[in-house]
Amino acid sequence: MLDHVEVARLLDILGNRNRRRIIDLLRQKPCFVTEISDRLMLSPKAVIEHLQLMEREEILSFRLDNRRRKYYYLANDISVMVQLQKQENVVLVVPDSRIRVRKSLRKLRKMVEIREEISHNLSNIDNDIDVLIKEILTISRDLISDDTEIDLAIAIAHYDLTLDELHELTSLNADDLGSRLEDLKKKRIIEQTGQKYRLCDAHAE
Image (cartoon, rainbow, N blue to C red; front, top):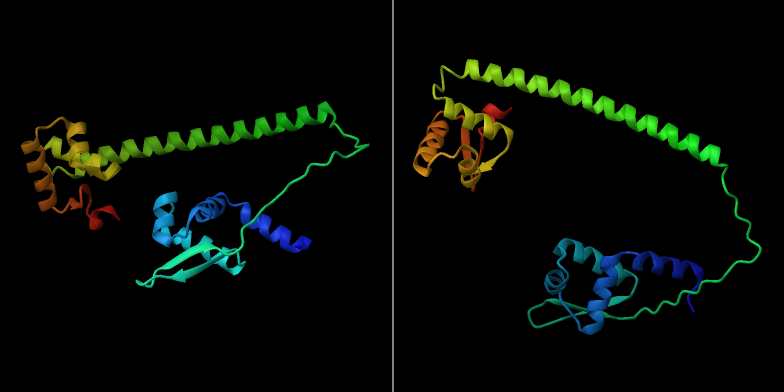
């Protein structure tokens, strides 16, 4: 029979949904880490952490196969029975409705104030972005004379984008878009990393 401390510790362990899923899986058969990861769609790192915790509590154990893989299995299964016992003579204390209304109204006021502050800040940021774009259009003329290339550079300044996304954004044909991107790469305005185009580090700082 477990004491209250041990029961509380086990309930903490079982309070995690993924640990319960692992236990349910191991009830069916022993599994190794990558198998648990694939079956439950969890990262191997997360699986290992759950397994180690339950191994320390002697819920799980493991054996090694010929390839030195750890096969985990239930060393001690867990059966939990929860009983609800009705309490007699319980007096419910209902808060004064006026207190609840005042509290809710104060909360509403605070949320409205926060919304107004955020809206004000967003408006300022939008204005700053517009000013900066106009500045970029002016100072980039010596380096980029083509308006379409400037638009491409500004678009990539917003987000890292793939060729398909840039094609969708500009509606340029593949050859035209490719040549303009190559021109921006030669000017060290943008660079390609994998499938995405992004600002060169020197220009993005």
